[in-house]
Every structure is written in structure tokens, then in C-alpha cells.
Image 1 (cartoon, rainbow, N blue to C red):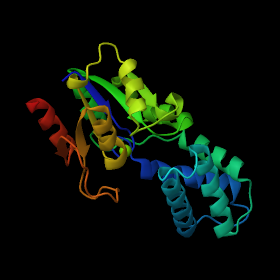
Image 2 (cartoon, protein in one colour; image 1 turned 180 degrees about the vertical axis):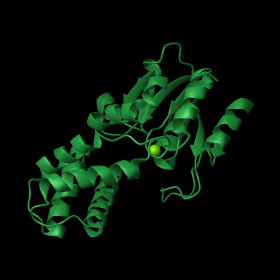
Image 3 (cartoon, rainbow, N blue to C red; image 1 turned 45 degrees about the horizontal axis):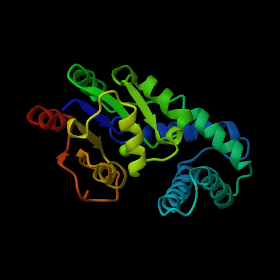
Length: 232
Ligand SMILES: [Mg+2]
């Protein structure tokens, strides 16, 4: 094994922590003069955001439409007034200020980087994903970061993985493994691309998908990932 293709959010980066921080920063800047911040407003946004992502994953809207409509719905349901495009931009600017690695994530990738070539494969947003990886301390251990938005197509599309393969010097599929939490994007993507995969499935994982058809190995912890790689 030579090439480790790591997913970012929910695998190495604590997206929920960063999202809550960013939402709060955005809220204070855009709406605090209308109503004080509350947990109910965050829950309301989460519901709108999840619905928008569901529509995107069903192919009913573009990524850009997803970004804007979640705030159109949030404004409508909360009764707050604002410009959804400006609110979305503020949210991404705030998100770019964050970057929380899970405990042990930096140590894991640092250690692995002595033996393997590490790459990030992420469907995250292009404005925020690079700074978040820098702030988290993860960035120095990766040779390159492939953000789907910049590629033009994302996981699990085979064309995304073809692009990644074409941009890694000396890449061979049988020496690569995809490591990620999402059955529908990471594991399905690996299947589509003919790559082996480690399904990172820690206790209490966010995903509603409780199975990951086609994964090669399953890891519940970073220690499991180390163990699997030692034995490949
Ligand atoms: Mg993920």
C-alpha cells in the first residue's frame, strides 16, 4: 500500500463543531439585531440544511442552489429577514475561520505520512476546506487536497476518482485505499473506482446509513485504521 485517500469531514475534521461555531458567528453578524441567538434557531437551520442536502443527493438541485435554498428556507421558517446569498457568504467566511481535528487525528496522519503518501478527497466547500485543513494542523501531512468543487464532479462519481488518480504521480489502484465515513460517497466511490476502502465507522457516527455495501475493511477507531494498514 502506498496511497491513502482520506475523506475530511467526520473522518478527520469535526464538522459539527465547526458548523455550530460558524453558524453562531454568521448569526451574530446578520441577525442579532432582530432576535438573540438560540439553540432553536440552530435546530431550525439544521433541518433546512439537511433537507437541502437530501435534495442535492437525489440530484434535484445543484450545489450552489443547495447553499442558497437552505437559507431561503431558514429565513422563511424563522421569520428573520435577510439576503440568503449574503447570509450564505457570511457563513462560509466564518466556516473558513474554523478547523477542528478530532482528538488523535493529527497524530494519526503524521505517523502514517512517514510510510504512505496521503491525499485528501473531500466534497467540502472550496472556500472553507483549505483553511480548515490548515487551522486543524492536518494540512502539512497531505501531498494534495482534492476538493470536488474545484474538480467539477464529486464522490462517489467515478470521474472524480479518475481525476484524483490522474493527478497523483505513479498512482496504481492496487496500491491505494480510500478511508472515509460515508457509505454513499466514500465507500460507493471506492467501489465505482475499483479501489479498496476502509469504512471509518466509530461508535455514535452521524450517518443515517448503517451499512456500507462494498467496503473492504471496517474501522471503529484510529487504532483500527493503524492495525488494518499494518496487516495489509
Ligand atoms: Mg465524511
